[in-house]
Length: 246
Ligand code: APR
Image (tube, rainbow, N blue to C red):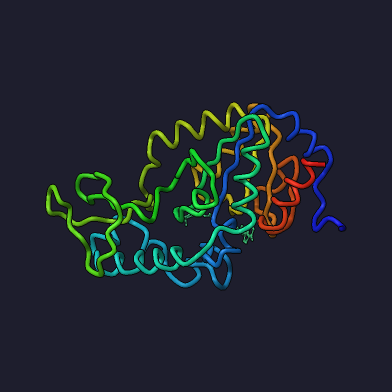
C-alpha cells in the first residue's frame, strides 16, 4: 500500500541511531480526537474567546464562576474524547527507541490514556485542581459551583498553567535536560508560538539534535527545522512507526 506521507530516509536513519528521542506535543495532536486547538482560524478556542478573559489568574479573580464553568465544559469535552492514532503511535515509539521523553503542552491526559508513561505535563492538567491561594494540588472536583479548598476555604482553580504563570519547576528542568541531551527532537502539533515550550526545539538544535516539525501547516519556525513533514499527526506518526519497522 502506498505510504500516506513521505518520511525522509535520513530521518528514519536518525531515529534508528538515536539513543534518546524527545517529543514536544501541542493541541494539534488532540485535534483528530475532536479536542479544539487554540489558534486554529475558525474552530480554535482563541478564535472564539479572548485568552486573557479566561486563562489568566486575573480573569479568575474577576469572575471565578465564569472561569470554573468554562474549564468544566472543557473537562467534559475532553472526557468524551478518545486518544487517536497519533497518541497511540507515540506510545508505540517509546517501545521501539532506547529512550523517549514526551513533553506535552496539552492538559487533556490523552497521551496517558494512549499508554504513554512519564509524560511531562508542561502546562499542568485539566483534571487536577489547585488551591488558588496556596497552590496545593487536589484531585479534580466536578461540581457546578467553584469548589473550596479543604484547608483554607479559598477557591480551587483548574490545575493548568495560565498565561503569565511560571511553568512547574520540575517540568521545566526535566524538559530542558531532555531537549539538551536528545539526538532527535520531534515538535508535533504545536504552533511554536508560546514560550518557554517553543524554545525547546532551539535548545535541542543548539545541542546537536536533529529537529523535526510535524504539522499540516508549517509554523513560523519551519525553516529552523532539519525536517518539516506537512501532515496530520494521526497520519504521519503511524507512518513513521511503519517506516521504522521496515
Ligand atoms: N496534526 C498535527 N498538527 C495539527 C493538527 C493535526 N491533526 N491539526 C492542527 N494542527 C496544528 C496547527 O496547524 C497548529 O500549528 O497544531 C497547532 C496547534 O497550535 P495551537 O492551537 O497554537 O496550540 P499549541 O501550540 O499547543 O498552544 C500552545 O498555548 O493557549 C496556550 O496553554 C495553551 O498549551 C497551549 C499553548
